[in-house]
Image 1 (cartoon, rainbow, N blue to C red):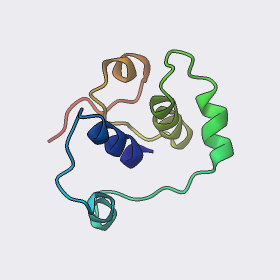
Image 2: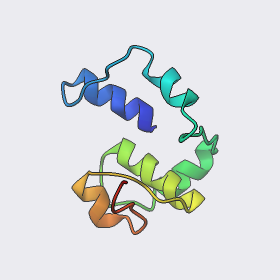
Image 3: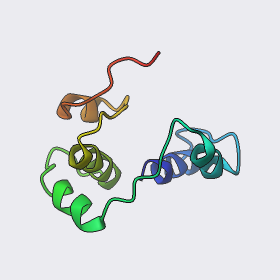
Image 4: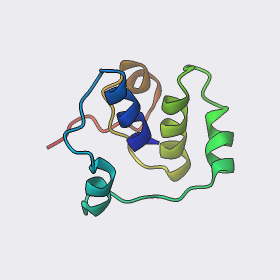
Length: 90
């Protein structure tokens, strides 16, 4: 979902992707991994997140919650409503 949201933001002029092979580059980067979580799990957890109407935010936060993994975000609404946010990148 994160990669799809980045693509949508770029298409809407709210960001830029430097490479047409963005997803392939991310998938080769050892800092990232594709987590094949079930759609049923994502949907169930997303239904609990009534603080946003953004489907990407719901799915991304739901994934973080379901896997109990920290989330890196600069979105104020996500940061204000999700308890497991990475506060600082080094």
